Image 1: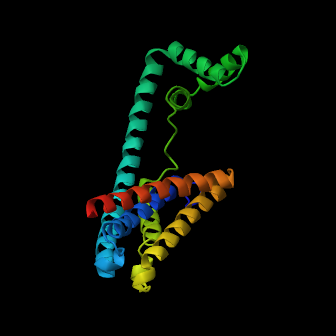
Image 2: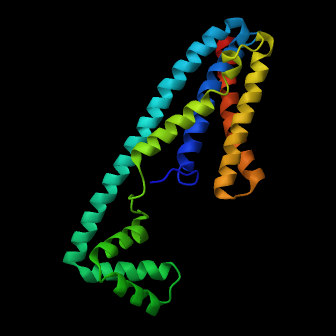
Image 3: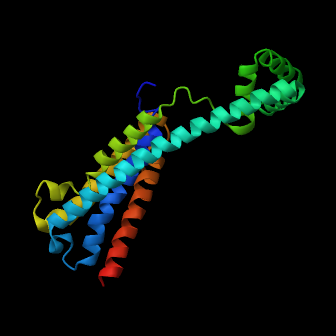
Length: 230
C-alpha cells in the first residue's frame, strides 16, 4: 500500500485531532486552574505533563489503530470463508443475494440478473461481491495495519506538539498561554486544509467542522481546569 494523503486521511485526521486536543488539554487545564495562567505553575510542568501524555497516547493510538485494522482483516477473512461455504451449499441463495444487491444499486431486473449470473461464474468474486453488497465489507488487500498505526502515531505527535510548542521554545511566560491558543488554532486549521485537499469538499464547511470540534474539546478542558482549580 503506497502512502498517500487520501489513503491515510482517516489516520491523519484521527491522530492529528486527538494529538492537538490531548496536549492542549494539559495547557488549558493548567491555565484554567491558575489565576495567572499556566505560567504561574511553570513551563516545566506543562512540558513534562504534555510530553508524557503526548508520547503515551500516541503509542496507544498507533497500536490501537494497528490492532483495529488487524481485527477488521480477520473479520473480513472469516466472513469471506463463510460466504464461500454458503455459495457451495446454496448457490441459488447467493445468486438471489447478488440480484437483489445489484437491483438495489439501480440496475434493471434483467441487467441485475445478467450481472449476477456473470459474477457467479467465479466463486471468489461472487463471495467478495456479496460481502460488499450485503455487509459493506471491502477487501483489505490494500490496507496495511502497520502503516495505518505508524501514520496515526506520527500525526498524533506532529500535531500534538503544536499546543505546547510555546513552552518548548521558551516564549515569554506572559505570552505562553495566548501563543498556545494561536498555535492550536493553526494546527486545527492545517488539519482542516489537509482534509479539503484530500476530499475536495467545501473548504469553509470542512474548516468550521475541524476547528469547531477541536475548539469545543479545548474549551471543555479549560473549563474543567477552571472549575477544579477554583
